[in-house]
Image (cartoon, rainbow, N blue to C red; front, side, top):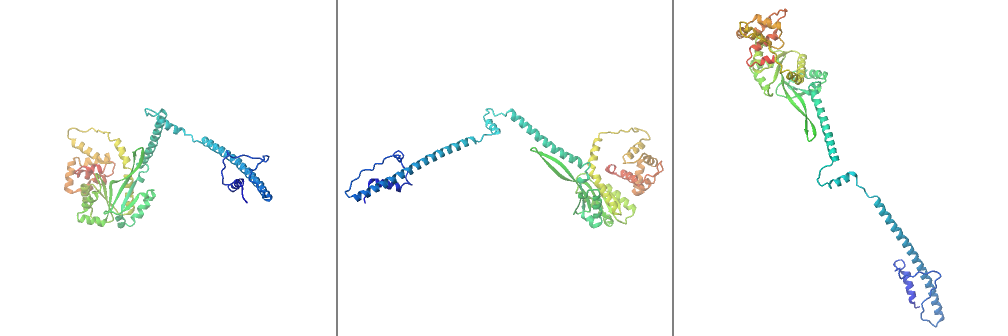
Length: 430
């Protein structure tokens, strides 16, 4: 059976209904009331063929109407969808406009800052800068004051905690009970952490002071710690070692080797621990010779308790030395002038009296007693060369004062050291 042109069109629409995109200008809308007039075709004389053909036309027309209705509904849906999409796009655009980020005041100031022609800071910026600088200066001052308070405490209330006692391990080998005794003593004074043991070539005890200072650089305060060696030492010798050094005449050489470790003026004490079997006249002459050539005093001890107390006394005295020096500096400009005799027979007596006044802690009774027994100091110096220092010390120590007390060996020794001095340091040291 042959198909007409209408059939081909309808079939094409049916086959390509889901894929085609119709041109809406050429589309005609139909309703159920419209009368569809089929196209005229060539008639056939055969009635059967005509009947079948009319049925086919009716079916085709019905299918066409269905397809047209489907297309119209699709068009409506597409129109609605396009409207919804359009409204959604408008809503998103409006939301974006509402949520637009507004720059802050600081950002606006930075933007407006570039608009200044002369580049000068505003009054508000100047106040802010000055306020920040004042705040930074206040912070730096607080840190500096904190370090100043620590420095003040290091020479006052916490002086012993800023001084470290360094003990040679050779002393522990020589005196086994020394370590336990000194640790117990320092622990009782709450300065056990300031006790250190080290390996050294000599049997010495030295001290190092921790000094704190503030270093300001680029508005940053740095706390600086420095450890300085104090010019004081204790040389501990056993009685047997001291005797051997005396026999070989190496005692002064040994003391000088220890003194080379220190710079400038130093103070040292040689402590002889135990028995040495040296007679007193020889021992006294040796002590004077050592003090005259090295400026070091010699002390003799036989028990550990006295040795520990001596070390502790040196620790406290060295710790408080800076404070005492400050007090001495305050009174250095004070001059005490004493009237004296300008001429006459009592000139040498007046000079001798002023010389005795230079000895530390000597009393008026003791000075008058010495002047009564030896009115001329040159006679006493000649006697010192004739009979020796030991005999002169013994004679002076037995001189009786007005109050019935004797001069004593300590002041007698100081007087002999003053008279036999070459450099005059003994007057300061004694």
